[in-house]
Amino acid sequence: MTGERSDSDRQDVEVVVIGAGLSGVAALVALRRAGFEDIVALEKSGRLGGTWRDNTYPGCGCDVPSMLYEYSFAPHAWSRCFAGRSEILDYLESTAATHGVDRAIRYDTEVLSSRWDPDAHRWELRTTSGTYTARAVIVATGPWHRPRHPDIPGLDTFPGTVFHSARWDHEADLTGRRVAVVGTGASTVQFLPEIQPKAAHVDVFQSTPQWVLPKPDYPLPPGLRRFLGHHPAARRALRGLHHWTQEAIGVPLRHPRLLGPLEALARLHLRTSVPDRALRRALTPTHRLGGRRLITSGTYYPALTRPNVRLHPTRVTAVEGSDVIGADGTRTRADIIVLATGYHIGEIPLADRLHGVGGTTLARTWADSRRAYLGTSVSGYPNLFLLIGPNLLTGTTAVPTVLEAQLRYVTTALTHLRTSGCAALDVRPEAEEAHQQALHEALRTTVYNTAGGTGYYFGRPGVNTFCWPWSTARLVKRLHAFTPDAYTWTLPLPAQAGRATHASSVRS
Image (cartoon, rainbow, N blue to C red):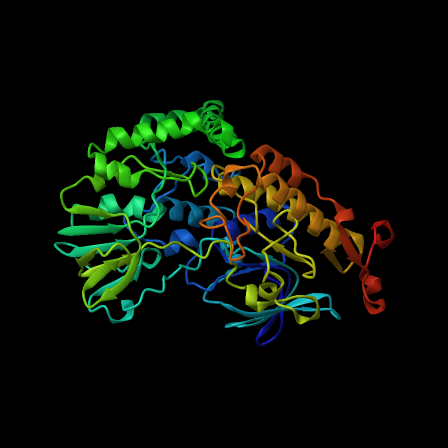
């Protein structure tokens, strides 16, 4: 399964997967089920899990129903309607072990550089644990990887404790302390209700109010879990109900004229949760629902109404000594600052370490706009596949659904490559460009593009590089059929021709 070492620090394999989180584990299982045994996953940490390993903040959990946040090949008896971080991490570890792919993971192995060798038609990866070469590379590092740290003057001289919510400092005891929270995104919505009872006082700085929909979270009774375990049809029906509920929410996001009822529900949730009119005004968004990441919670609004919590509807502009200062002149003293300022969404951490044809890095290729054919293939990077690449997610689609559709596409492409006698495939620039034009034309009329080119869904140039503008069903259908004509196929060198088979059947 893991290939043969050619020397003390070099290993040659058929496929390298970079990352062992939700995407990486799914990739290993999909490859093995498709008949690929000579595979490894390179994981820079000492444990699998990705974002569920790294994010340990209080209250961390899934924001889609648990039954949708599982692999179709590994159903799980979830303890809650919306699973918590620890249960998801345990699920990933047990799934990897059950399917035997945990043995293919190389821990504490960080990729330092990955280069396409045009002569050998292979990728060469330099890592902290030696060199690997591979016929193909699957990048499974995920979009929620690199925390975004704001540039706040004076923050580096703050005398207390400062940390990002994505790298929670569990040594910092919040009990009886004054805590300043910078940002009101999905993480704050989850951890604020957890830290509020402990802290003496919490100041929450909100630069942009969020739409918050009610979250029907509840423990799943043991009896119900046993029933669902013994009656697969009932479990499929409940899972289908969750799926079509998510899809129903997605319809008005694609057709904003239908948003009225959903926005009315969010306003009702705010009005019934927050009695104070002034606080409600500060929490009422001015953008359309769905223009930024959808947030669900049944505990965030009540936490903001507690006597020891104060909302500041302003961004933080400076820190002076122990004082946190807002753009409106607000000044509040803090012992601990929590930066809940999100991630560099969509920026693959390895983009500046992936060198394609001619030595160009993916970071440079994406300098103007991040793009990929079906969010998977980038022209100029042969035999390279991205998982959860640009423009593959929506505000309602569960990531495992997208992953499994993508991996069917990727394994089909690799099987074509293996049986064709060709050495490499590279998506045609015109296919990539046609896909981009259609995608962004469709995005133009969705609610995702109403935030003025800023916010969660947008890259630096102001282009939406996150959202898929159509339905989940269309995404799955589009990825179901691999299209060889969208790719250029490279025949092997003469010295390699003896190992090739069926080369004449491949379009070039």
